Amino acid sequence: MPLDAVFPGAETSATSDPKETVPGPDAADRTRCPGQLPSGPHCDGLVPWTDLLPDAFVPASGARRLVGGYLLTMPKQAGNQAPPESSAGTKVVTFTLVDLAAGDPGGLVDYLDVAFRACARATPSTVAGVGALVGTVRSEYGAGSAEVVLLRRGTHLVWAALDGSGWEPGEQQRALAVLVARLL
Image (cartoon, rainbow, N blue to C red; front, side, top):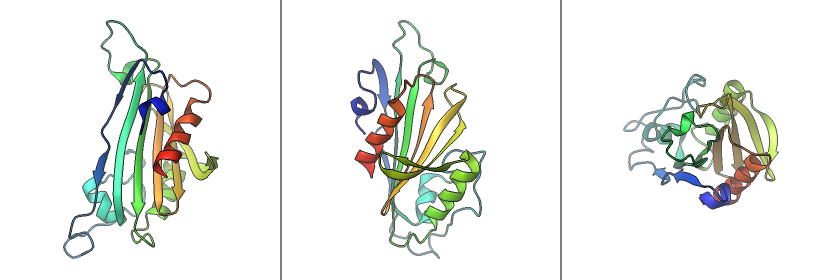
């Protein structure tokens, strides 16, 4: 994800190198690599509310690939070494791309639909021309709430959280448009 496309002109910023998780050689053999998504979402956890680490999530969901990362920007504050989560004006985009296996054998689409509606009170919407579920969760960066979005196009799913208190009008829509253009 290009930081400049999401946060043009950012003074102080950081990105993560996207972390990719793919199924191991035994992932298709359920006797050697068991796992499944929980029967219901764990709404007290983080998106996607499974409480599974990526290495367990990939075989449980039947995903072919999972890629996650983040982009962060905060106002330039001379001499201030405050952590981003306590800095006013911080903006953060966390994202996860999932490539689904044909037929969605792990039932991930249905699981995420239930989880987003239950845990984020998400409702159907359109984001950058793509059908989406959009809801809110508690902010991790002092903003009160963060917007969470689930997007799907074909065998690609993307969920993202837009958090922080420094968003100007239109910036979240631009960030989501970049996600759609780059990840779907």
